Image (cartoon, rainbow, N blue to C red; front, side, top):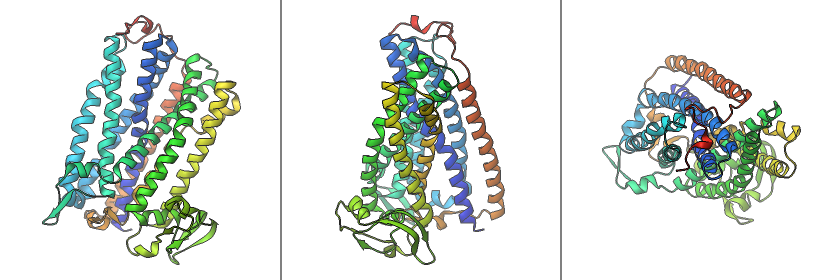
Length: 447
């Protein structure tokens, strides 16, 4: 097999595993801060019970994210040396900023957040929680700034074939960055919302009817119900930005092979690259034009405008539909479950539905990232560096061997993660009088 394809599969495997955990920690840090602030204000032990349970999930997710992130950085030197040779003066500093700011912030205060209850003043512990939450978001900021620059590069010049920065503000706040960052932060929040609701529903179904479990279930469902309409609006704006800067990606998302006025929305099709057409289409006339141009007969560029410079259509087309389909399923589940939980309380049916949706945020986020990253092909950095020009001279057999090891390792780690999560969910909460530091949180000073 082509070493370039294998290198792409290997990096995609690493990225697919890694992104699962920052997607949780980015938003869960802020949820923990919310729990802590509610406890500080109300002195209601149910908020502290929620904090003490979910901080364990945060610690587990944070550790998995750090470990899986290290392997990706190795691949820049092994599989993708051409990437750093070409754009290292831009990519290197952005990656360094993430380590120097976000990672050090998280590492400095994480221990206080995890083990500080009863050992440090309450306000210091609350501050540590806030700083760790801010650090996870700052980490996302730098990584998404780099990825967005690779999608819509600006603020650079080329000297001797090497990309050099000329305007760091333009590089960081490139045209797609605000949309992608907002979209990702909301995606993280939705992932955590369904994780909160699903795990709490699982605990409730197993007989834990404590006030803390019921309250977290409501928080998760309500957070999802509020954020999904916002995400739909942000996604529309992100799509319009993509249409402006990467129209070939949008054409692949929509399965539009020929430029059309009044382009149809294809609910389903099987894109056929050999014939450059779709099979088994289910079209809705004019809806793509209406959504993308806000005009009934608006013109949408087709893939025929980008022959040799557009991504593989089928994976982008199907990943986009998985993401959108899950989004609307989340909308229905969150609205119905929120209404039931607040008006009537939980029942077994809605409990099992929420359990089934526990990891739906992971699936939707992965689908969205596949649209983003596969949709950029054949470019690694749009207009500057083709993927085929960045791959290193690593033999295919070597990549296959290491890829196999990665897959086995990641399956073991993912199984261990989910197993640990289920183990924690099966354990009853300790009474709030039994703190790691031997101090009842009710007795902690508010300041």
